[in-house]
Image (cartoon, rainbow, N blue to C red; front, top):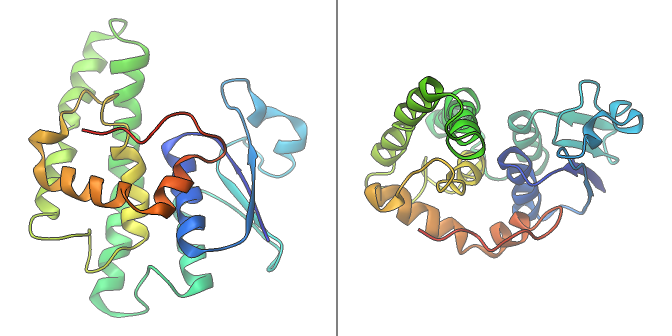
Length: 208
């Protein structure tokens, strides 16, 4: 059994979707970061620093934070959604790192300034609006592809929840047809739908 401590953020959704895809038994615990739950002493005892998501795998005794590290761990634990060797393995990790190092942080700043704090910092709004050109990179990668690498993988699971916030990034997905098709393909997966509602349902998956 795995305990998942999470909230309804793209990083949290990566892991809940992955747990559904891997078919692992888990319990979700809502850590409402809007109320400061991440700084409760009982949670800090699990994750010093107070970030989500975190998993506690009672089968192995491992407690793990950082969503990318969790996806790698789950893939290696189950032997699924990450090729065991060869170029496909390296490319899967490459695109996972692309999300962790660029796509996620940049878009996180974009919806912070463009949606939640519109009009307060024009320079930052302009900067991060221009940086949403990362959608162009993603669109180019998906040209002629159903998934980011050869088959559906943890790289797709990592990127998709960030794309699901396209409205907050002020992005018209119709301008990126390859991304749009990929996004809808994944959105139709029952596992993605279930994971999107963890730790609780907030809305239907946004449609372009």
